[in-house]
Image (cartoon, rainbow, N blue to C red; front, side):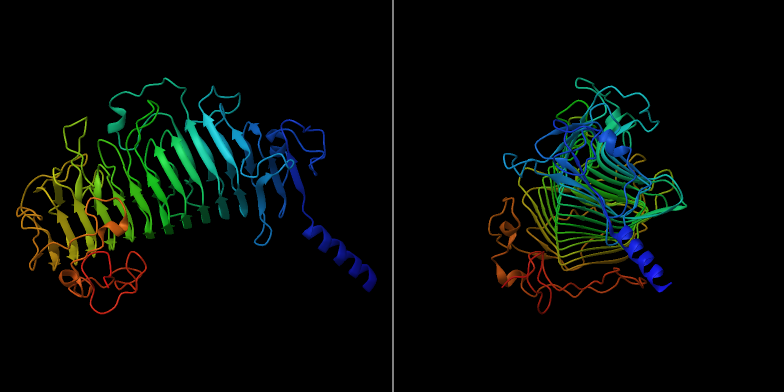
Length: 545
């Protein structure tokens, strides 16, 4: 009996650890093959779609080849130690290792679809989907085309999806030559059909998507958003967006709605809101959040956001709490630098550098919003304006070149505002403007209260307009003598007038009647370059030596 049980245990052990490795080559393959070696690979993605993959299984696409179609992975799950892996292989020594296999999903809804899946890793693949007539049976009321779509459509908990080193490019729903009407860019998020880079969607309240990683990916030239998370009541949780490059997206670079717990670090986002193709939306911030909580956005670069509205480097849309924007470089973004909308609680911008943000002028080139370097807006959709509440803005360095007007808006519904230890280096003029979302703010009596606005350094008087609703009660004036004012690198904004900034900051404490502060703490250990903070804070984003 013991021998039988031992044999059964051995069989079960072997069965549980066995995994298959499948190869796909569109030139040398045949779907009648076993697909389990380089010499007898499958030919098509359709064959992979017909398989029931198990924990530890691998699907490897031949490098240097274009694989037409889409990969559909539904109701599959690896395990914690044995994820299902989608990757690549080198066919022979003649194939360059740097040549990723390409999935050409022209005419399909997605390059890769992960539906109700867990413990899946996809790496080292390039995906494009440049228009194309829809294939039979591939219709959707959503009318969108994605490089990668991860979604939950059934009740349950779906976790541990990792997307690594992917290249997503040229994703459009429409064919070349399609032209959007002039009003489309004025709608809140676009109402027409678009192509998207990478999307995570969970519309079900009885499902959860969690432990999601997007790392080292390149997303470029898509009709709308590069990387988008769309949850419902924060049913997308624990996301990591690391070291990605997002360029020339027709919409925002990165966007998250309904997300709880996220870390966005080391990404380079440029030319969001691109309009160099008539199929693109033509508007979008480098990154923005909505209805999300406990999000840290740090050590990213946001440059050249374009569009007639919004299109900041990074903005915090309404219904968020505990969103921290720190250690970022924001430069040449049409919409501006700091934008915190209504019904937001305990959000912050700290230790960032802003260069020539907010250059957009309302009324010029179709712009319906002013660009702003600092904007607190009570806008929260169709509801009455309210908040934001307990907003912290400290130790930022803001540079605006001569000839550009720096604009500032503070909504009278704001409550709880801390502005301290910042450097406002504005070479030209500054002016106050009203918030101008879809239901623009109206002038009136200020209700702003719980204000700590003190100890900021200005290049000259008037850098903070006198008619803004809140005023610095202890302003400092002087020239910090940046290493290279007007440059595009972080180190260009190191002050050389050490005496003016060294230990001249104040310690940051919670606002009156705020029992929370910031969820990861108000005190930091390092500056934007990683230098240890010692003594009293310096002014701006750098610890001087």
